[in-house]
Amino acid sequence: MFKHLNVLKDQTGQTMITLLVFMVVAISVTSTAVVVTINNSQGSSDVSRGIEANQIAESGAENALFRLLRDPTYAGESLAVGNGTATVTVTGTDPKTITSVGRVVNTVKTIQVIITYTNNIMTISSWQELH
Image (cartoon, rainbow, N blue to C red; front, side, top):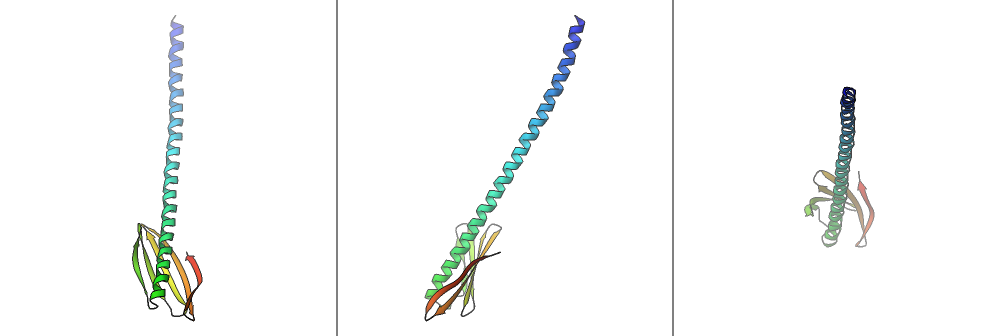
């Protein structure tokens, strides 16, 4: 009868060790999954802000084109657009260079547009994102 009790005591210890090993593995897997999810979420937010900053910079450049059509001496301005700002500068005479910087939080995107006037007709010769 006592032999049977000793065997049960040994098995309880082994069960406890096995349970602890499985718990450590489960906690490690869960922690890793949480870290990966957080990193993916932050990456998605960065991409989203980048797209928004680019769209804000494009809006600033388009606004500058309209302003230049009405007033050829337009030199630029700072605009509140959505969740960010567009800072527009116009330099040169012919060709003119429009530089529009879109900012959302710490994300910045820059669009540069080069235009020329020929016979009072505005022509866009270049539209690009600067890095």
